[in-house]
Length: 305
Image (cartoon, rainbow, N blue to C red):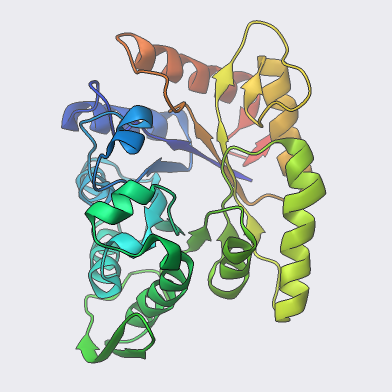
């Protein structure tokens, strides 16, 4: 099981130098992935959780590709309907080239209705649009000249080079918890990438539904690669807590559970929604990440101690 970190590419502490420092520190600790999130229009609902400034994920990853050497770089997650799929495919392929094959493409349908309105994208059709766009992106990665015919996007004989280093393209981690998202993960993803879930929900609802969808689609069950909130508390939290929340012992138990479930990766997310990143927050987050590597995570063996 590999380990990643969601970097805070938003808020008053986010600067190019700060993002580079985050990525280099995460790389030095031995984490396998440094990932960033995606918003385009900071409408009030988005701004409440992810305050400005918000650095674009693809621009950020292109910057980090030049300052890192070994750590995987990824989106957690690209909102598929926000950009034309040919553009998304080409930018992602460029970053995979710049990083020599280190890109992970996390993708989902999105949730912020007012942000969709600003971008003039139909919110109620976001699931169908996401399915087509992701299929179109993969078509662009697969061949030097790509064509695609769909209800929401169509193009003929588009030259798509440079192709990604990774063939037939970067690994795709599909986010979301709905039935449509799980179906998208089975049909088009290499991994299912749920966020902010409890262990009980994952065991009782999420994974059984994923297996059911895979059986219905007659396809393999994709890998499990969740993003979990990293929030250390001085006292144990009770039932219903999210994975990654609680004492260090509870977090260690959560990582052990995910390892037992066969997760291929887990992304630790210190960017707790609505919790302002005040001065000193970055140092505390990095201290926790380093403590986990020393006490809980064996990054060299890619397992929980």
